[in-house]
Length: 237
Image 1 (cartoon, rainbow, N blue to C red):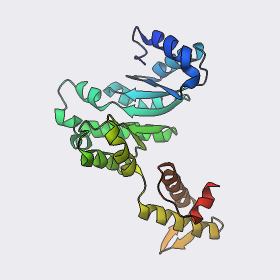
Image 2 (tube, rainbow, N blue to C red):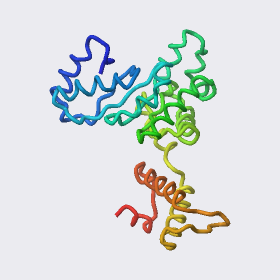
Image 3 (tube, rainbow, N blue to C red):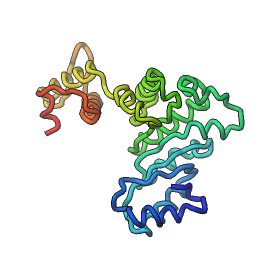
Image 4 (spheres, rainbow, N blue to C red):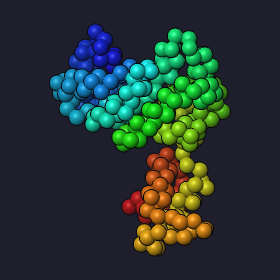
């Protein structure tokens, strides 16, 4: 869609949501600045007949980052994405162009702060944080490294691709490793044998918070198509 304050926004809603809203899983809203922007879009979507259709937001400015927790609290919002290039350009040259690069976007303090705010806001409200693009689409290592860092260091659970060649490297980098999956299975089976009471495993105390973490890891493995042992498949029945 166009941004909610654009002249063509309501035309978008009428032509797209009004005609094929029943076939959509969500609507992406760019340049979201506030909770009120989400609310305005939701009212328009509902009036077009797609009541309950979820929205995803793209945050692209310093002010929007400041309001990330407020934006993430909207009940119809499912996901927030970070608009890296617009965010950098919104600083009028105060952030070097390297802040948009595959490596620079993980080292510039202002960019890193924005990513952390968005990720934290999403997790606080049970929403999905979606990481920004890597423009070096021919560099598989850059894509994989960015996806891995976004997942393991910043808490992002999805990531944008701008070329089909990026999809598999992103999925592979964000999926749990075979060692992590094996560890999760060991912990969950041990916890099950103990009726989910706290246990001593390898000299470490594990409790329900730990079990929840490893169950979520196993769910992520299952969702990304990683192999799970036959015994562990019982958890998904």
